[in-house]
Image 1 (cartoon, each protein chain N blue to C red):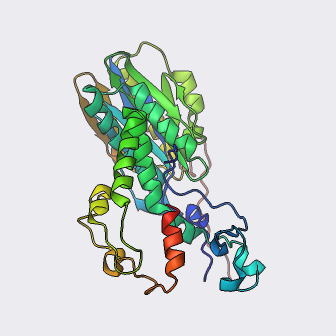
Image 2: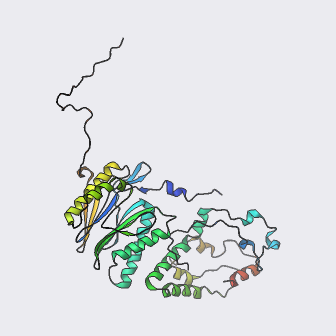
Image 3: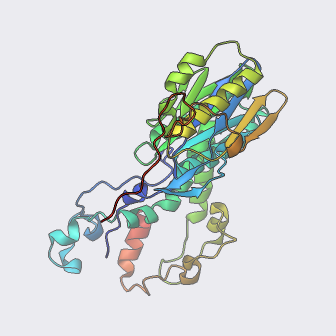
Length: 139
Length: 239
């Protein structure tokens, strides 16, 4: 949780990053993604996409900061703790995933959105189980 | 993919180019605003209500971008409801103003909002807080804001007296707003006012044809002036 009263996501800082193509050693994974290219690394500023991607997170952060200011640090800390407790999923991140408990805590149990139809399968079944498990353990 | 520039949203936005005002008197505050909302030169709403309730005895006057000020007022309204539930009492006007100021300052790169917060509370009585564009907080006995306010600073400085009662404060607000609305293109319509006291909130409405009138100039042809030679137009000789 970021203690800020931002109402809308702030403009992204323009920077290049290796994060998308990094392997577990922190370097560019040539075996999987091919040689490095500037086009892939430099982040072009598509501010609308950045704004939409970070919208829900910013609104949620605003509410948590308001709770912190009013009730004290324990209030958002408890909510975040509950969310984390509910997110520990023993299943492999392979096929259809849905977390009703988390949906209830986040207040989206009574709404339908594309993520409810795709249920984690937006990109189709993933064939690199190793990558998925690595990404999950880093949680 | 097309690059959409988020900054461009600011340029054509619906604008509360405005005249807003708040004056503190002995037992309460009088707040007032014009009623025009423009998108460029089109008047999107000529009967806007710019006096927004954020709590029972705390109102805010909004100027600047309509969307920005509505968003801020909604969030502050929510925050003050949380406050009331936690502390079991109405929040002081200074707390409400501090919450407004926190939002306006932390989001100053994304917002275009000038807000005047005014109200009555038990600890201090009436108070008026001005939060102009950068997000500073200033407590003042009277405050004016919006694009029309620039035309009436002189009138307000020359007219305001301390120790006024309710009727004098209402007349002051009415006259000031009428003068601002007559000179500023982005202000006009009707005058809406609220009188906030310990007893409650009273809404006042002055329709556009009953605004106080000041010097409005003369006809071009002064026919009533004695000795003025009125020359009747003679048709031109056409060959």
